[in-house]
Amino acid sequence: MLQKTGLIAFFAFMYLVQAVPARAEQKWFGLAWPERHWEYLGNFQPFIDHPTQTHNRQWDKEPWAPSDWAAQNPDGALGVIDGFRRADIVRRFYVYRDTPAVEVGPNFYNLGGKDKQHVAAMIDEVYGITRNDIYGIFTLYDWNSHKPIGMYSQHGLQLK
Image (cartoon, rainbow, N blue to C red; front, side):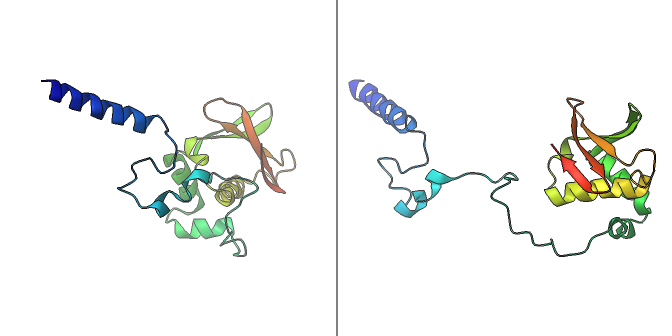
């Protein structure tokens, strides 16, 4: 009985000692992983659209127009807008204080910077907001907070 209790206490102690330094470094009994496994984990930072550490922009030089997306959809440009709604990228379109508004859904935030610009350009192409002398811009609002997150004009998308 004493041996069994001592064994349980030993493994409980080992578990606690191992759990305390919860960092990405080699633990004191690193028999399972070689030393090189832990080499670069101390400075790991996930990349989430960081403005000063950008990815290579593979498609920057490629010409893009909203008609490219419309040509790929059997229903044309309106089919693309309907796809934005079904994917919860865009929730609804409305007018707020005499300015056209677009309520973006949670999946808008999952898009990269270029795709956010392309979505806004596609909306402008379909509804012709920036070509209108009265408006010329539309505002993007968050679906959850209902606060403005940016605007789109003939100069492009500007996010906060």
